[in-house]
Length: 321
Image 1 (cartoon, rainbow, N blue to C red):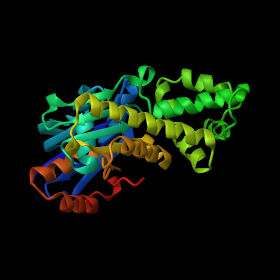
Image 2: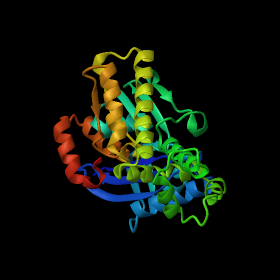
Image 3: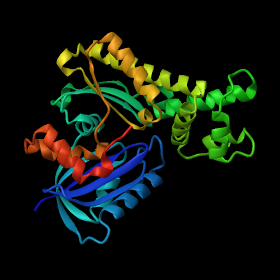
Image 4: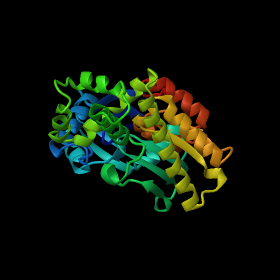
């Protein structure tokens, strides 16, 4: 029997699933983010320790035949901590974009529109050297349409409303309640005294979604703008790389898309206006499922059968938004 471990770590969270060659789930873990652009080195290690302790809880030291890994952070920390629980045979580094495309629609080639804590649009090829990207500039220089961008726009809208020159928005009260503000200026301290300010800003995104569901015009406009920016970047990638119609299959993934349907709707409307017939998908599974998907593809299991089996065995990792 073979044992396989699949790990996905980024700015918001670290997830891992341990399974065997019959796709039986043997262990799982979830913890905070590991990307040191959004968290501290100490917190990154603490989150790795926490996640792996959940996965291997009570198990004797074992051998992992294959490790599928996406890790946007100090990966040497992961290997140090993993060595306490297991020896590892083959290490297969997938990359964030490839993992998203695999888990999202079981494609090995296509376009991935990622809007999580940060944002990027990738053209994923079977040959990694041919991959290309629009974005990846980080939260100060770019990341338009990301959770950090959405959170920043929401906070700036609240400040504008407080000062009296912006439209009133229920985001004011939602953020005050969530952050337990005694006075509005406390927002400055919460953000700038945090060791991971961009993560704090991105955490506002679900509140923007909540306000949008309640019909708040400011929140709805922010999310529509986020969808439009993601579409603009996707169009840029298609034109820059001259992506042919057969590869214009776009998978959207990342937590920002989950905030409210208006973001995805705007994205689809803009791209379908530019490229009639373009295929746009909501993702099937969380990124961490790239490992199980790769195992299915290695065995040449038909996609619909693979999706059905993985949905039954890993139901907690199905994405619904």
